[in-house]
Each structure stands twice: as C-alpha cells, then as structure tokens.
Length: 274
Image (cartoon, rainbow, N blue to C red; front, side, top):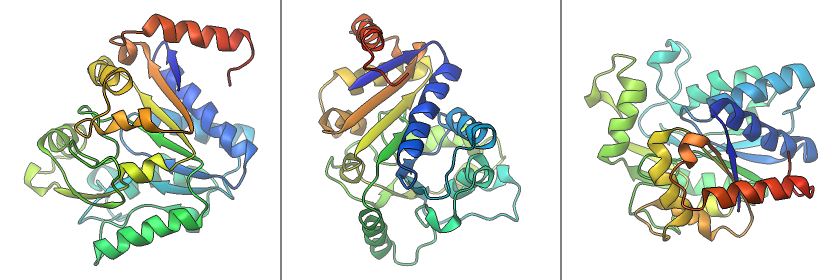
C-alpha cells in the first residue's frame, strides 16, 4: 500500500489526477471506477484540464460509478443544484467536459423497476468489460465506501442499501440543505457497488482530505478490519493500492513519519510514479 501525503487538497488532487491519467495513457481502453462527493471534484477538474490542454483521450475509456440514490434519476431540465442525482453530478463535474462516449458510461439506475435484477446486470457489465482497472474511492465520515454503511458484509455485491442517520445527515448538510430541499424529501435508499465488488478492482486509489476525516483515516489504515468500518477492507486488497491524503487527513496516523520517509525513499530510488 502506497500512502501518499500532500500538503493540501490542491496538491492531493493534482496527484490523484496524475495517477488516473497515467492509467488512461498506458491503457487507452481502461475501465475506471468513479466516485461522487466533494472530495473528487478537484481531481475531476484537473482531468478536464488535461483533456483540454494535453489531449488526454477518454474516447475508449469505460467508467462504472459506485452508487446512485434509489428513487431519483438525472433530470437535465432542472437547474444543477436542484438535481441531486449522482448521474447529474458526474455529468456536470466530468463527463460533459471530456470526450467519453455516452455508451461507455455506467451509473446505477436509481429508477430501475426491478432493482435486484438490475444490480445483477450491473455486476455482469463490469465483468463483461474485463473488470475495473482502477477504482477511485472517497471515504465517508463513518468509514464507508459508496453506500456500504457500517455493518455491510465485506463480501457484499451491488445491491439496494438503506442509508443510516450519519449518511443522511452528511448528505443533507452538503447537498440538500443548500438546495432548500426538505430533509423528508431525501432518498433513504441507494444502489451501491458492494465491498466485494470494489475489492475485485485491479487497483484502488482512495483520496481523503480534511481534519474531520483524520480519525477515520487512521482507523481505516492502521486499525483492525471490521464490517463496522467498511473501508478497512482496503487492507484486504491484493492489487495495487494508493491512498492519497492531505496533511490534515493524515494528521492522526500513528506511523505518519514512516509513510513520509517511505515515499521519500521510493522517489529517491525511482520507485515512485511522481
């Protein structure tokens, strides 16, 4: 596991974008797993800039998003701040700015009439694409990935998931409150990739910023593996793992100085990406 620590959010986002761009350049038809939320916005902005200024080509890339609220779908007739679907988020923050093909974008369908059958179909599409080459992940304040709430099986697959109070509170403050949408109108269920699905990605890139995430970062990376903190499953992944943090998010790591020294040595001896 490579734990990369950058001074601030901007530098962390620069690093994450370079990692993703490296996969796209080395394998133009790569399969990317993508995430929503405030954390990856900086990374997406940099990828857009790379596309516009450096010709980073997404025309053969396929993407699979982690999750979507159940019961809502993208509505381009609405102003962006009133459309709380994750599909709209991805459209506005990344997809409409790059040359990815619409048919290569997969986002869970929050309006699926038979969600159980749909979740199986989504899993099948990932396998049909050859699996995910690089999965981008954020980290919830209670240590969840996607909508894999505390107590989710570490072997779970794509499914309907009820949202807990912490997730509802966080999402209300971050999105719905700003849009003046009443709390009772928030979706209480989501479709999410499972932890087992995520762990099948060949490589994982987890990005986290901010002091409010410092305690949970330390638990995820240095604590015991537990279904109560689903992102601790990162310790079970057998492929390439990169965790990119800003200084604030890394501040509670017990072995912080060791991680910094390892990164310095890898750079010195040419073992590092950048």
